[in-house]
Length: 84
Image (cartoon, rainbow, N blue to C red; front, side, top):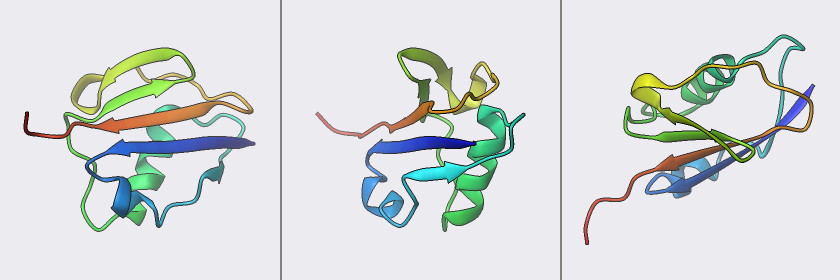
């Protein structure tokens, strides 16, 4: 099944090398997708990265609510930007 991935924040340049559409198993979870994403990155996503699926905020990578993905879901990763 296909899901969409959007990465914002300080890693958006690095994430530009990632596909926007991901083909995942029918029983895939958010954690499964994040494992695939981290495997393609030079350095893993930081624990402070926020995770959302559609309009549902799941928490930061350090402690997020894992859930099953559905066809057409959009997973949004928001990597915090330091500064003011």
